[in-house]
Length: 277
Image (cartoon, rainbow, N blue to C red):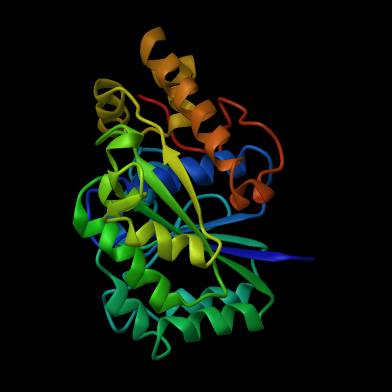
């Protein structure tokens, strides 16, 4: 049986990395029951916040089954970062790990280099995916080249443009800016060229209405539950969640991550978060 490992990463926080991860986990879990989710940002991570298993009083349970909720550890702490590879002891079929922004150096210390993590994963039979979520500003874009250099060529790379920050054509630092149409001369674009050189792919992280996103955050609610009456959200907000998940799934199906999706999103799956109380 094939096994898959997905790292979602960025070089800075606040770019939508955890938004991408939680949507990915929800889409994957809508059609399969073997998705192990981990938050490497410790007990303050957003993936744990939205998809973690909860007690009857609504608080996050300290004990998490990564197949049902979200396993968690802090990769920035020396005593815990080994869990990033200790995951392999359980031989999960599909693992999705939300890595905290700016944690490249911490990750590299797990086995003495990020390529060694890739080698170890491949040695255990895993196909490795690395998703980089970016905005249109240079800090995150430049990290694409750093990430490819760090993880090496034996990885499936996907860059996700977060459309909550800008429209897709505004990512000129990543895509390049044509100065001379006749000659094709351009500025910027080195990150996209580096991605193309390793067979990487580019997709979009769709935008969701800020009010809807804020209400989901207020109630620690998943997109899947948010699309149902169980969430307590108004019809408009429920439709926002439904449309977001549909658009997100369409993007996932455009890249190699689509090979991990078994069935269409089923709004209302009880596994994917809690409803408003």
